[in-house]
Length: 155
Image (cartoon, rainbow, N blue to C red; front, top):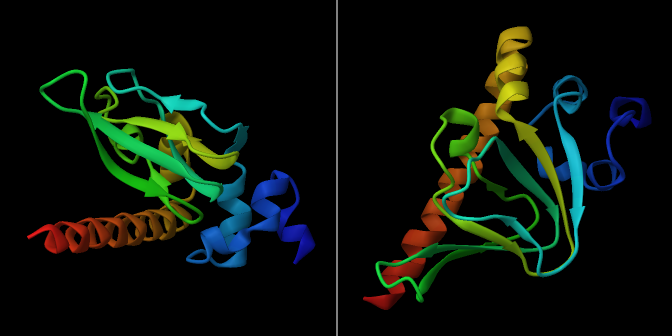
């Protein structure tokens, strides 16, 4: 199994379950399209309104995602995301600016895929790309369900 993860950053090697929806050969293929970043606590990952050109899987740590309200001094916490979560999905799908601000609440390891690499993966390895997209959709769907559950508790 070690050779499957050759070339991956340490945080991805130590936590392959983040990509548990991929088979070993698919992970080996898609790994070449990702890069790894480690960010200290209180680091802004991105700001609302900035151009976005990558999406991220959180391998370790926690990231808080917020959005400004119509009252600029107020922000709404949309979620606190940890290991296995996927953030910034729109950035690999379109060219719109970031709709949220993301801040590392603690030291965080993220594995990122740029829009260009995502597009290349889709063209060069369609079946691996499909598996990755299914996993991303599953992750986003779970996040949406959690948000709905939180909303229900308010009412």
